[in-house]
Length: 143
Image (cartoon, rainbow, N blue to C red):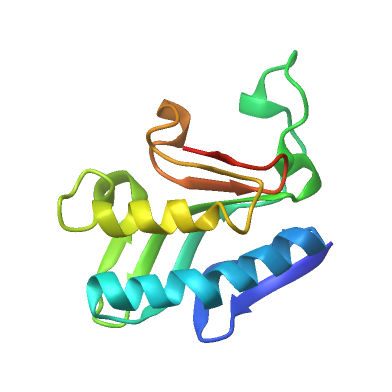
């Protein structure tokens, strides 16, 4: 595991622990997709990513009979908001329902699927209404 403190010019609300594959995929996604897509869709630079965490030794949905979550091995990151250079803060919870920001957030989630094994967002289920779950397990699950 490694501690991720930032993605170059893009800061984080706090550092997080990540498996090496998650750290690399996240760095590539931010530099190759998130920053350019943000510039294109919003006209502003992406300066900060807010997350809910990565490493948490638990089962999926905290259910005792469920398999281990990707978070149990630091193989997933939950992104909850983005801050732009113009001062705007866009949360997944409210931005996903906004006609102004939903297309950009959808583009980000779709692009994430080229870097992670799975990308889950508000349309996946109610548990993901306020964040993008970007995980390394599997390949091609993008909702």
